[in-house]
Image 1: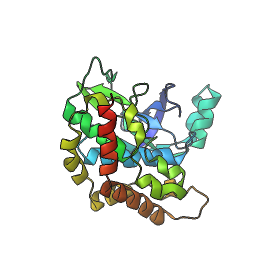
Image 2: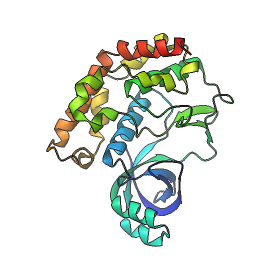
Image 3: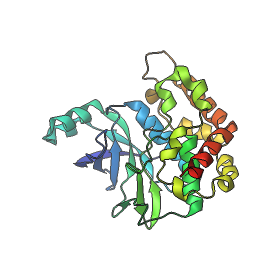
Image 4: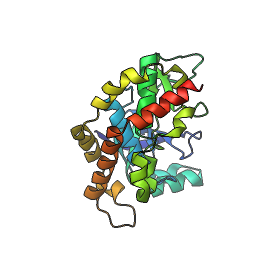
Length: 257
Protein backbone atom coordinates (compact mmCIF):
# COMPACT_ATOMS: atom_id res chain seq x y z
CA UNK A 1 0.00 0.00 0.00
CA UNK A 2 1.10 3.55 -0.71
CA UNK A 3 1.65 6.23 1.92
CA UNK A 4 0.78 9.87 1.27
CA UNK A 5 0.87 12.99 3.43
CA UNK A 6 -2.00 15.40 3.96
CA UNK A 7 -1.33 18.87 2.59
CA UNK A 8 -4.81 20.36 2.94
CA UNK A 9 -7.96 19.63 4.92
CA UNK A 10 -10.77 20.19 2.39
CA UNK A 11 -14.11 19.48 4.09
CA UNK A 12 -15.63 17.28 6.78
CA UNK A 13 -18.13 14.56 5.86
CA UNK A 14 -20.58 15.08 8.69
CA UNK A 15 -22.84 12.21 7.68
CA UNK A 16 -20.20 9.88 9.09
CA UNK A 17 -20.32 9.29 12.82
CA UNK A 18 -16.52 9.44 13.10
CA UNK A 19 -16.32 12.72 11.15
CA UNK A 20 -14.19 11.56 8.20
CA UNK A 21 -12.97 14.27 5.87
CA UNK A 22 -11.99 14.92 2.29
CA UNK A 23 -8.32 15.89 2.23
CA UNK A 24 -5.72 16.67 -0.41
CA UNK A 25 -2.39 14.84 -0.26
CA UNK A 26 1.12 15.46 -1.50
CA UNK A 27 0.43 13.43 -4.67
CA UNK A 28 -2.27 16.02 -5.59
CA UNK A 29 -4.97 13.39 -5.05
CA UNK A 30 -8.12 13.70 -2.99
CA UNK A 31 -8.91 11.11 -0.32
CA UNK A 32 -11.55 10.37 2.29
CA UNK A 33 -9.54 10.31 5.50
CA UNK A 34 -10.51 8.06 8.41
CA UNK A 35 -9.01 9.45 11.60
CA UNK A 36 -7.20 7.23 14.07
CA UNK A 37 -8.26 9.58 16.86
CA UNK A 38 -11.99 9.26 16.16
CA UNK A 39 -14.40 7.58 18.56
CA UNK A 40 -13.66 3.91 17.79
CA UNK A 41 -9.93 4.54 17.63
CA UNK A 42 -7.47 2.29 15.78
CA UNK A 43 -9.86 -0.68 15.72
CA UNK A 44 -12.02 1.09 13.13
CA UNK A 45 -8.95 1.54 10.93
CA UNK A 46 -7.97 -2.11 11.39
CA UNK A 47 -11.45 -3.18 10.29
CA UNK A 48 -11.38 -0.72 7.39
CA UNK A 49 -8.02 -1.97 6.18
CA UNK A 50 -8.52 -5.71 6.71
CA UNK A 51 -12.08 -5.90 5.35
CA UNK A 52 -11.31 -3.53 2.49
CA UNK A 53 -8.27 -5.44 1.30
CA UNK A 54 -10.02 -8.80 1.70
CA UNK A 55 -12.85 -7.42 -0.44
CA UNK A 56 -10.30 -6.42 -3.06
CA UNK A 57 -8.73 -9.90 -2.93
CA UNK A 58 -12.16 -11.34 -3.75
CA UNK A 59 -12.53 -9.05 -6.75
CA UNK A 60 -15.16 -6.81 -5.20
CA UNK A 61 -15.15 -3.15 -6.30
CA UNK A 62 -13.19 -1.08 -3.77
CA UNK A 63 -11.50 2.34 -3.93
CA UNK A 64 -7.76 2.30 -3.34
CA UNK A 65 -6.78 2.36 0.33
CA UNK A 66 -3.71 4.37 1.33
CA UNK A 67 -1.86 5.13 4.53
CA UNK A 68 -1.92 8.83 5.34
CA UNK A 69 0.54 10.83 7.42
CA UNK A 70 -1.21 13.66 9.24
CA UNK A 71 0.68 16.65 10.64
CA UNK A 72 -1.05 18.05 13.76
CA UNK A 73 -0.02 21.55 12.63
CA UNK A 74 -2.91 21.39 10.13
CA UNK A 75 -5.25 21.92 13.08
CA UNK A 76 -4.10 25.54 13.32
CA UNK A 77 -5.86 26.45 10.07
CA UNK A 78 -9.23 24.97 11.08
CA UNK A 79 -11.84 27.11 12.81
CA UNK A 80 -13.93 24.26 14.23
CA UNK A 81 -12.61 23.16 17.66
CA UNK A 82 -13.98 19.62 17.13
CA UNK A 83 -11.97 19.26 13.93
CA UNK A 84 -8.90 20.76 15.59
CA UNK A 85 -9.10 18.19 18.38
CA UNK A 86 -9.60 15.34 15.91
CA UNK A 87 -6.57 16.33 13.83
CA UNK A 88 -4.35 16.63 16.90
CA UNK A 89 -5.57 13.30 18.28
CA UNK A 90 -4.79 11.63 14.95
CA UNK A 91 -1.26 12.92 14.40
CA UNK A 92 0.82 10.35 12.54
CA UNK A 93 -0.41 7.43 10.49
CA UNK A 94 -4.05 7.18 9.45
CA UNK A 95 -6.01 5.51 6.64
CA UNK A 96 -7.91 6.87 3.66
CA UNK A 97 -9.90 5.78 0.64
CA UNK A 98 -9.46 7.27 -2.80
CA UNK A 99 -12.09 9.99 -3.30
CA UNK A 100 -14.50 9.10 -6.11
CA UNK A 101 -15.54 12.36 -7.81
CA UNK A 102 -19.02 12.21 -9.26
CA UNK A 103 -19.95 9.03 -7.38
CA UNK A 104 -23.56 8.81 -6.19
CA UNK A 105 -24.96 7.22 -3.07
CA UNK A 106 -26.39 3.81 -3.91
CA UNK A 107 -30.16 3.75 -4.44
CA UNK A 108 -31.51 0.19 -4.86
CA UNK A 109 -34.55 1.45 -6.76
CA UNK A 110 -32.44 3.38 -9.26
CA UNK A 111 -29.36 1.11 -9.39
CA UNK A 112 -30.44 -2.53 -8.93
CA UNK A 113 -27.23 -4.60 -8.90
CA UNK A 114 -26.66 -7.83 -10.77
CA UNK A 115 -27.52 -10.90 -8.65
CA UNK A 116 -23.97 -12.25 -8.79
CA UNK A 117 -22.41 -9.05 -7.44
CA UNK A 118 -25.15 -8.54 -4.85
CA UNK A 119 -24.74 -12.12 -3.66
CA UNK A 120 -20.96 -11.81 -3.42
CA UNK A 121 -21.24 -8.63 -1.33
CA UNK A 122 -23.86 -10.14 1.00
CA UNK A 123 -21.69 -13.25 1.43
CA UNK A 124 -18.63 -11.13 2.10
CA UNK A 125 -20.35 -8.90 4.66
CA UNK A 126 -21.64 -11.96 6.50
CA UNK A 127 -18.10 -13.37 6.51
CA UNK A 128 -16.51 -10.22 7.98
CA UNK A 129 -19.61 -9.50 10.09
CA UNK A 130 -20.12 -6.02 8.69
CA UNK A 131 -23.08 -4.58 10.58
CA UNK A 132 -23.25 -1.41 8.51
CA UNK A 133 -24.61 -2.10 5.02
CA UNK A 134 -28.31 -1.50 5.68
CA UNK A 135 -30.93 0.40 3.69
CA UNK A 136 -30.56 3.24 6.19
CA UNK A 137 -26.80 3.40 5.67
CA UNK A 138 -25.76 1.31 2.64
CA UNK A 139 -22.09 2.37 2.51
CA UNK A 140 -22.16 1.84 -1.23
CA UNK A 141 -21.41 4.37 -3.92
CA UNK A 142 -22.28 4.07 -7.61
CA UNK A 143 -19.07 4.69 -9.51
CA UNK A 144 -19.01 4.29 -13.28
CA UNK A 145 -22.45 2.69 -13.00
CA UNK A 146 -21.23 -0.01 -10.62
CA UNK A 147 -21.80 -0.33 -6.86
CA UNK A 148 -18.52 0.30 -5.03
CA UNK A 149 -17.86 -0.65 -1.41
CA UNK A 150 -16.88 1.99 1.12
CA UNK A 151 -16.57 2.22 4.90
CA UNK A 152 -15.83 -1.10 6.61
CA UNK A 153 -15.03 0.41 9.99
CA UNK A 154 -17.92 -1.46 11.63
CA UNK A 155 -16.79 -4.88 10.35
CA UNK A 156 -14.92 -7.45 12.49
CA UNK A 157 -16.89 -6.26 15.50
CA UNK A 158 -15.64 -9.27 17.50
CA UNK A 159 -12.40 -7.34 18.13
CA UNK A 160 -14.24 -5.06 20.56
CA UNK A 161 -14.55 -8.08 22.88
CA UNK A 162 -11.75 -10.58 22.41
CA UNK A 163 -13.13 -12.71 25.23
CA UNK A 164 -15.99 -13.72 22.94
CA UNK A 165 -13.93 -14.39 19.83
CA UNK A 166 -14.62 -18.15 19.79
CA UNK A 167 -18.37 -17.62 19.74
CA UNK A 168 -18.08 -14.82 17.17
CA UNK A 169 -16.29 -17.11 14.72
CA UNK A 170 -19.33 -19.40 14.67
CA UNK A 171 -21.97 -16.68 14.58
CA UNK A 172 -24.64 -17.03 11.87
CA UNK A 173 -24.70 -13.21 11.65
CA UNK A 174 -28.43 -12.66 12.03
CA UNK A 175 -28.06 -8.99 11.06
CA UNK A 176 -27.70 -10.11 7.45
CA UNK A 177 -31.50 -9.77 7.38
CA UNK A 178 -31.00 -5.98 7.23
CA UNK A 179 -28.51 -6.03 4.35
CA UNK A 180 -29.50 -3.56 1.64
CA UNK A 181 -28.55 -6.01 -1.13
CA UNK A 182 -30.22 -9.10 0.29
CA UNK A 183 -33.32 -8.76 -1.96
CA UNK A 184 -31.03 -8.88 -5.01
CA UNK A 185 -28.79 -11.72 -3.76
CA UNK A 186 -30.32 -14.55 -5.79
CA UNK A 187 -27.00 -16.39 -6.30
CA UNK A 188 -25.75 -16.95 -2.76
CA UNK A 189 -25.22 -20.67 -3.21
CA UNK A 190 -23.53 -20.13 -6.56
CA UNK A 191 -20.97 -17.60 -5.26
CA UNK A 192 -20.10 -19.51 -2.08
CA UNK A 193 -17.24 -21.64 -3.39
CA UNK A 194 -15.75 -18.79 -5.42
CA UNK A 195 -15.78 -16.37 -2.51
CA UNK A 196 -14.35 -18.92 -0.07
CA UNK A 197 -11.52 -19.74 -2.48
CA UNK A 198 -10.41 -16.09 -2.42
CA UNK A 199 -9.47 -16.27 1.26
CA UNK A 200 -6.78 -18.86 1.79
CA UNK A 201 -4.40 -18.60 4.75
CA UNK A 202 -1.71 -16.89 2.67
CA UNK A 203 -4.08 -14.16 1.48
CA UNK A 204 -5.37 -13.51 4.98
CA UNK A 205 -1.81 -13.36 6.33
CA UNK A 206 -0.75 -10.96 3.57
CA UNK A 207 -3.61 -8.58 4.37
CA UNK A 208 -2.96 -8.70 8.10
CA UNK A 209 0.71 -7.91 7.57
CA UNK A 210 -0.39 -4.56 6.13
CA UNK A 211 -1.79 -3.45 9.49
CA UNK A 212 0.69 -1.26 11.40
CA UNK A 213 1.85 -2.75 14.69
CA UNK A 214 0.77 0.35 16.62
CA UNK A 215 -2.85 -0.14 15.56
CA UNK A 216 -2.79 -3.66 17.02
CA UNK A 217 -1.09 -2.87 20.32
CA UNK A 218 -3.37 -0.14 21.66
CA UNK A 219 -5.32 -2.36 24.08
CA UNK A 220 -4.14 -2.54 27.67
CA UNK A 221 -4.03 -6.35 27.68
CA UNK A 222 -0.34 -6.61 26.79
CA UNK A 223 -0.93 -8.65 23.60
CA UNK A 224 1.74 -7.83 21.02
CA UNK A 225 1.12 -7.20 17.33
CA UNK A 226 2.19 -10.67 16.17
CA UNK A 227 -0.16 -12.39 18.60
CA UNK A 228 -2.99 -10.06 17.68
CA UNK A 229 -2.50 -10.78 13.98
CA UNK A 230 -2.61 -14.47 14.78
CA UNK A 231 -5.90 -13.89 16.60
CA UNK A 232 -7.44 -12.18 13.59
CA UNK A 233 -6.16 -14.89 11.24
CA UNK A 234 -7.50 -17.67 13.44
CA UNK A 235 -10.91 -16.00 13.63
CA UNK A 236 -11.16 -15.49 9.88
CA UNK A 237 -10.02 -19.01 9.03
CA UNK A 238 -12.43 -20.55 11.54
CA UNK A 239 -15.21 -18.41 10.14
CA UNK A 240 -14.34 -19.54 6.64
CA UNK A 241 -14.29 -23.19 7.66
CA UNK A 242 -17.74 -22.87 9.25
CA UNK A 243 -19.18 -20.61 6.56
CA UNK A 244 -22.20 -22.84 6.00
CA UNK A 245 -23.64 -21.36 9.19
CA UNK A 246 -23.72 -17.78 7.91
CA UNK A 247 -24.61 -18.83 4.36
CA UNK A 248 -27.69 -20.69 5.55
CA UNK A 249 -28.66 -17.72 7.73
CA UNK A 250 -28.48 -15.45 4.67
CA UNK A 251 -30.57 -17.91 2.64
CA UNK A 252 -33.17 -18.06 5.41
CA UNK A 253 -33.29 -14.30 5.71
CA UNK A 254 -33.74 -13.86 1.99
CA UNK A 255 -36.52 -16.49 1.86
CA UNK A 256 -38.34 -14.54 4.58
CA UNK A 257 -38.39 -11.27 2.64
